[in-house]
Image (cartoon, one colour):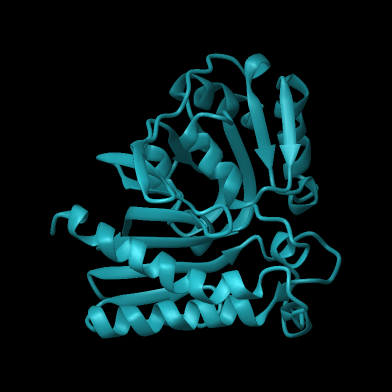
Length: 268
């Protein structure tokens, strides 16, 4: 496999390309379209699955750059679907993870950029262009970039659920069978916070949050994140401890000891 480090400058280039589209439109009077009119909502159950010109223009710009630089690579994106998925290398894109936060003017959304090799997520980046932060890496190591300065990422130790800070985007995203399982964990946890989308995952890698529990996520929601958390010392699995390939029910933890306890609690 080609040295993943050679793709890191391109990750940054893609992040800048997306930011050039999203920054000028953040906190502007954007038209909000509802994708739920043509399909299901985004899982919260209020009939809304929002998308804006910022989502579409950011993904389109990244796709153009990928096709120019790596025409033999594939692309899987939230807004414009898949192309050339049989390629050895496939870029996985979510131009704005957290569109609800974006349209409310809250700077805790992010652009997710991932790279698969032969079907496995191997490299990823979480970019927050308003705060000028990027979290990126692979299983070999992950890094925090802010305003051009780069330092290693490291999750923090947390041995018990009772001492853990946990997060989920919105409890309403869980099904009626999933929510009681999540609530067993939340009732034990020291602190729980909602609403941060991919930014909560970045905080696991940064050692500020101990666990994120989600369900119903798509490949573009988690595959760019998993290598970053793993490279920082954390674990990312489904609720059964298996692969997150393709999305589904997700648990991200900074400490392997905590991760095992969370999985046990979810399966009780």
